[in-house]
Length: 79
Image (cartoon, rainbow, N blue to C red; front, side):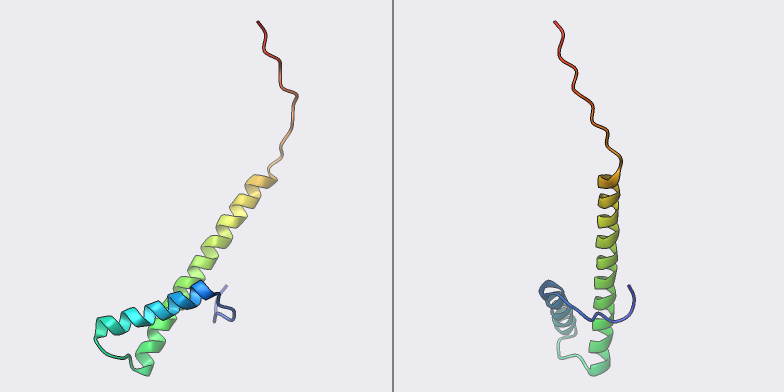
């Protein structure tokens, strides 16, 4: 997963907007075009990293589920 984000969910869009807002608040005024592009580039890279981490986490969970499971009849309690 590299390159531009083509589909962005609502929480991801909110994250991008929050990143721009936080950068503007830190600067104290509106960002110029190149500054805004840089902030968005960093935020997009963070989103891509998060997506990759979620995909790896899902793959590990799927591997755990796919592990062979053999059922055996439970042994009765003996007195």
